[in-house]
Length: 488
Ligand code: GLN
Image 1 (tube, rainbow, N blue to C red):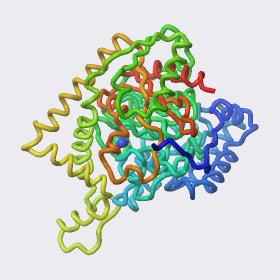
Image 2 (image 1 turned 120 degrees about the horizontal axis):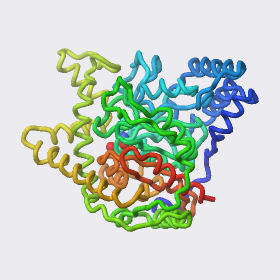
Image 3 (image 1 turned 135 degrees about the vertical axis):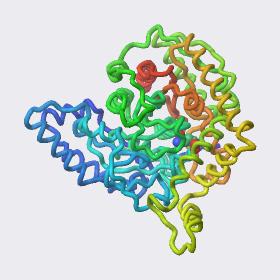
Image 4 (image 1 turned 90 degrees about the vertical axis):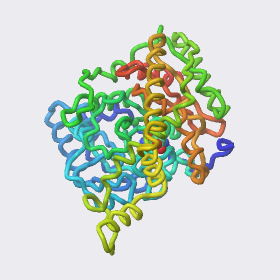
């Protein structure tokens, strides 16, 4: 059983809250430049063990910190993230910094522009520390698919941090950044946040611009924040959310003050608990922790209601058809010509394509391209891809019906706590099952927050997933905040 023992080597350290840091910076008691320097020291110390950062953006960070200090000294208005050190998952582009997406195929690629979420963070005063390790092209649930080596879980270095945004979760858990950005296509923010004991947000599809995101599966990909507490995660989302003329899929809906909303009481909220998320495969200690979290919500004045989401059982095959089909199309652009890695010594153009892709992509990415190409091929399109789209619609409708009766749905974020490095690498199917509770919301386009909800006997974190209807992040934050407040 994966949660029986835990090694004693721990790198867990809680960052100060945004409010504390911002106050220090605004009053001049804390210099953004010193704060950035202290984070680089911490990174230098622990990165060799945890393998979180792939590259650092020191020059840019120190320049931004100096701007913030200057503004603070002059008494100029400061942004909501003034001087806050943040890290960026290496699937989002930062001008001039290497963008690897955890893949060899992008080796040497230095994008000439910034992702919109990165631009927005900096405009709010954030200091970008560097680019963070992840599974190759965000495909994975353990961060073991990175071409640059796995990330270790700061809670227990023999365990995975989850994936694909494993580095982004580990960075916050180990205080190597106050907050980070990750991406979630099928669980890649929520599952690692739960494995590392931090807060992670899956914004509604379209809530956050994806301009500058290296695409995996475009009908599913979302950008979202990680932070050490719910309020800070809400503040981050408020900064990066909103319409972007550079991303036609971004929503025009106005952006609420999520941080403020997250503090509203939960009394009277109706919480749905779907039976399908508490069945076979759920680790007993995870169940106990989530049941305790549900009791805490009752004590805070919520009404808890059992619900049923019967199509949940089709979610994994549906997700792995849609995601791989879209991945096979998105990854066709990596041909050795336009970006990064190119195989040497190919006699013909076709050989150059073939060798570059063969040498540049890792095993899991190749597996996905093969599966996806098959699902889209003429003879199988109707049987696989089209069928998956139909089931996807049913899943989404099921959630819509549920949200007519409840304000939020709570589930375990993952069926287990963090598993050991190497435990699932030989068995892709068991790795895919790690996403069983997260892919549903991905397919439905709804939003959610994962919040730490107790630990197992040996101290491994458990995460509760709080789901809410499209564009109702505020409710998810409120419920998550209530769970967080009840933790000791
Ligand atoms: N683990 C899932 C996968 O491998 C989810 C990945 C993600 O959300 N980017 O597809």
